[in-house]
Image (cartoon, rainbow, N blue to C red; front, side, top):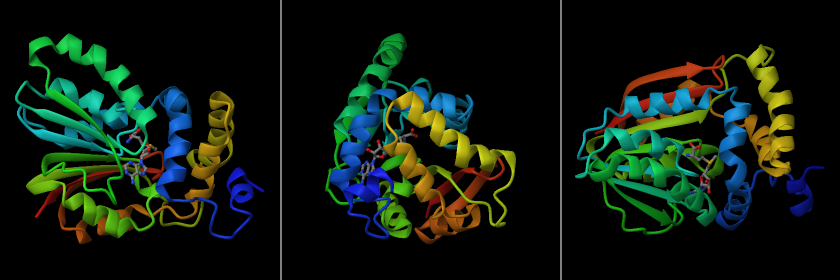
Length: 254
Ligand SMILES: C[S@@+](CC[C@H](N)C(=O)[O-])C[C@H]1O[C@@H](n2cnc3c(N)ncnc32)[C@H](O)[C@@H]1O
């Protein structure tokens, strides 16, 4: 029985809880090691995917940009050099500890930009339920967020409210190939090796148990793209990585 099952009394369907207080605790505890573990378990690929997300957004120097479900700000950090002093970059996340790590990460990057740095704000809150008064953005990044929501379609519809018409959303997400076979090296690594390495490096099994347990419910890339379109976006481009385990999709709000 997993840590989730034990806490939830073994209730079926309770293995990947989505309630904000649970997620906040989970990510507050994960914040310190999240980035270094990601770097290792992605076999160094995470930086390349982040660059692709930011390039796909085609940012302009004065844009308002939201890093939604920002975690420790890996996507925001990649965006900073693309933005000028007239830009605003908002990082929003449920977890205060994740945003604390984001501040630490962005501090030196912003210092190096000097007078060319964009204005950066850190907002703690629930992007699905709270009215955070964020307004609309030219570009929204949504990195590895959709496994933590109850309903992907309504979460994407909510994200649509943060994007100006004509603005861009870029989604980076784990996806499940449409074929049933999970026997490719990337899938075997993901299912059997990554959780072990991640748990060992983090000294905590919970986040990686969550990852493994939510894997069966991943959307396929076509399902993800359809959900993005159903939420009021025109798809611009997409790519898949690691035999379809990771999808990056950019879309314009209509
Ligand atoms: C897997 S991390 C992704 C971090 C980052 N986007 C990245 O690309 O590495 C998911 C983040 O979503 C945050 N989160 C989960 N549910 C949320 C919600 N309803 N509103 C805001 N943040 C949320 C968690 O606190 C966590 O930091």
